[in-house]
Amino acid sequence: MKILQDGSVATARGFKAAGVRAGVKPGSDKEDIALVYSERAASGAAVYTTNRVYAAPIDVDRDHLGNGGAQAVVLNSGNANACTGEQGLADARRMCQLVAEGLGLPAEEVLVCSTGVIGVPMPMEVIEKGIVKAVGALAVDGGAAAARAIMTTDTVPKSFAVEMEIGGKAVRVGGMAKGAGMIAPNMATMLSVITTDAELPSDLLQEMLGKAIRRSFNCITVDGDMSTNDTVIVLANGAAEVALEAGTEEAEAFYEGLEEVCRQLARMLARDGEGATKLISIKVRSARNEAEARQVGLSVANSNLVKTAVFGNDPNWGRILCATGYAGVELDPEQAEVSLCGTVIFKNGAGQPFAEKELSAAMQIDEIPIDIDLAQGEAEAEIFTCDLSYEYVRINAEYTT
Image (spheres, one colour):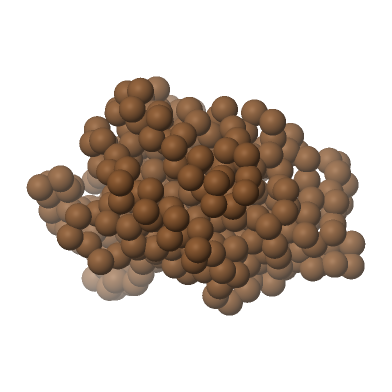
């Protein structure tokens, strides 16, 4: 597997993308409408937020993906189109229709995503003009602009792509994502569009996407808040002329690439958490099963006491042990072992001696590893989160004002 430098959602063959400024965000000069387009018919799959309060685009996407195919995705930032009633549904459908007219597609072949402030009517006049502009701006090198256009409180755009050799041919998987706050499983406001030039039936694509998300986007948390809009969409257009079937080595090789793209995008989301200064990676080992490993990891990752300790470079191992203990997983403290930045801090049921000043200094790096060995089995999971800083409070206290 090869990481493609400057890879994007338009890296896979047969895809184009665009990002344009429409004026959805009043007073902003940044892009706010993105469009991803496959030049040929594609199969599609998606996973959505499990929040019972969800945005209008999710209803539309579920309907449009009923036949397993999609050829374009239009996205806007600055307005979530959530809790907007029947008008919100009409606006989401209108966005699909405008893209369809511009590209000569049936409206059912277009998916839609929105992100931003909840409960505000969509400014359709500027969005309609922006969609026309985006259709005209589609390009094979438009992935970077598309990634910028879906940002809200993100500080950096997030794109990643890989290439694999399958059946003697090069297959690419690329994607973009946005998200910095309101990120928590299931899923972890986040949006992502992933594209590939492999050929897969929609049911196999859905199965693979679900598995990849369990090991990537559902292994991140920024603040424990789940959005109304979380969506991950994948399109597969077959331009690489590699057809995949379930249960084959070729399909497994493709899955590894899909999971890697999801995993790297998920890491970027956690690292760019609102106000974050550090990425925290929590590896839970030797669990009885993967579900319990994830449960322990997420318990530690969602602990505000752990997150603030990391922000302050404080090697307070008691906070990590406390969150491990209340995770709801049976464990024996006498057998468990915990390390922080490579230093064993808990073992044999007690804290271990360590040089506090040296470990505090070691915590001043950008990525903080926490390793928890439960000594119960062979399963493991890795969870990503970020520290909790003063800036997080400021950003969310002023979000709509």
